[in-house]
Image 1 (cartoon, rainbow, N blue to C red):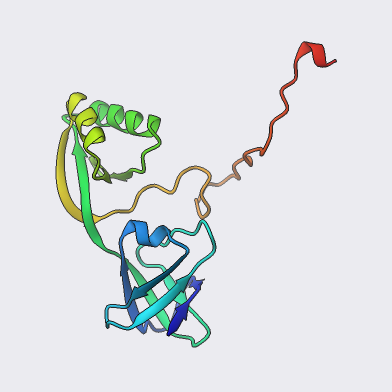
Image 2 (cartoon, rainbow, N blue to C red):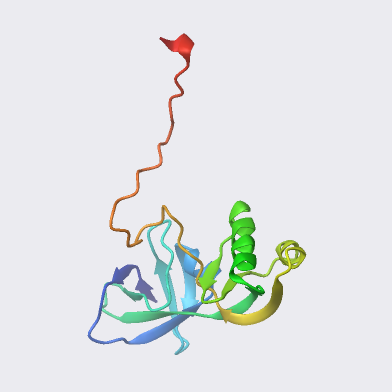
Length: 163
């Protein structure tokens, strides 16, 4: 069985395509099938999220391009930018994964979130689309011009009595 485990920044050739849902692109160990039907083993570093267009290889030199599969999602639109920002705020407040597009938000299918968004006045439609949520502020690969401060594992709280 072909094993893929290493991300490549670029490749001169692509030997196959691997179409995965977002849930599958978050898993670090799994069996999957290339578009050709060939079964592969996929091993990535824990915490890796594969994105549409990523290139993977293994010991054999075979190169596969990852494609985001279409899956059921909710597309959220609002009458104006303020309404869409309110929706984004409330989704973020619930730590929901959100794809931010030009004039829309996209989330996983979740009836509770759909009802909340409709209550905010948003138009929520169920669609089939590739889901590419934002990576988040502390995810690797963001392109800020400055490094983010590391999140402390344990923060000491200083109290006046500690002196």
